[in-house]
Length: 152
Image (tube, rainbow, N blue to C red; front, side, top):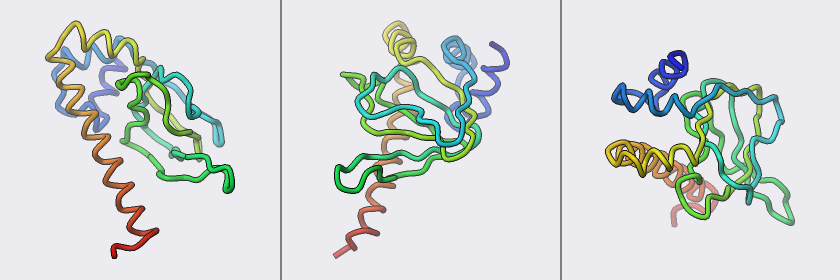
């Protein structure tokens, strides 16, 4: 567990997190890897995990009946994949697939929800960090829309 605690502390998401919170996160964490082109999850699936990406890149895709998979974002080292564990009904909104070999830390969603209920200080800290992830995604999506449709 100490190795996971250190790995979380070194990830941008875990920077400056209180030691007791790092220990709590590490309790539900594991190191995971995904092969190139492997689907990490698909839209509509239950959201059981969040991933702190250590290396590699992940395509976040939506599916269009006429165009197939459309990559709307690419995530890489130091980013977070998956926040739907936080929002009922806890279902994925996108597909995610490894563009190359990906090494990450996975943390169980139900475990995180339980910790947030048990320790509201932990929950508030985690929410602040995840709302930053969501805000960043919205900003990137906004910029993509401007690129596609222009700013007129």
